[in-house]
Length: 233
Image 1 (cartoon, rainbow, N blue to C red):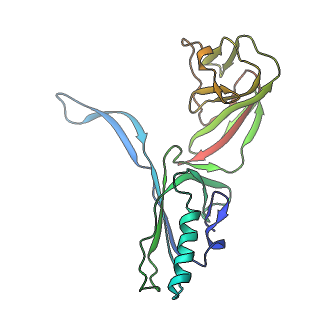
Image 2 (cartoon, rainbow, N blue to C red):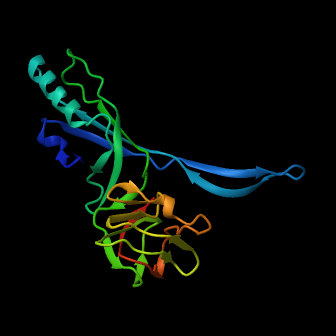
Image 3 (cartoon, helix red, strand yellow):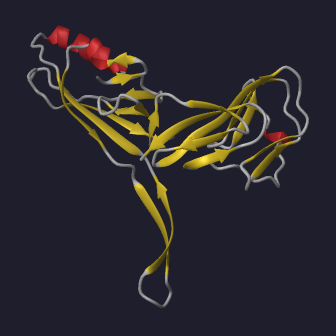
């Protein structure tokens, strides 16, 4: 099953899947060259994008039918959008990516089996849990996986809130106020909004933003509920 934006590829065209190749995340190590001694000092590891290639065949010798089905595949690809891609490798995880290459096919060789769809994960190259965990702020929680989780605060406040802080015991981020409405604070993107409008003007710049991490018995105090999605490399 190759499900993109909620639609299964095999439900829109009678394709025969040949292979699914998922590349590892591109690793971008940062090191500082030693001026005198041999070697270099490792600073940190960064990461880039991840690619997915699906190869398939479309065994239809009728040119009109074949083109109609190829058009359906191109429409299914949702060009210009990043969508959830679910692959048969996992039943509980997904990738978020955009289609970056379409099949290059022949009208004569209808039997060819090397048609390919290319996907690229940009913003979130990790495998991400399909189902998240909701934890009230202040309660203890555990985060498994092999990559920092997605964490956000999502709650509705009928009246404006005065100075509000969130803390993990080490880092504390403070807002001088939070207007009334649906509040979303994204710990990964380091942005906050109410009803879709940024409230970062209320963020105290001397605060320390909380960075999501793996580990047991964590707790983040503040207002609202935490939404946590575990991720894997």
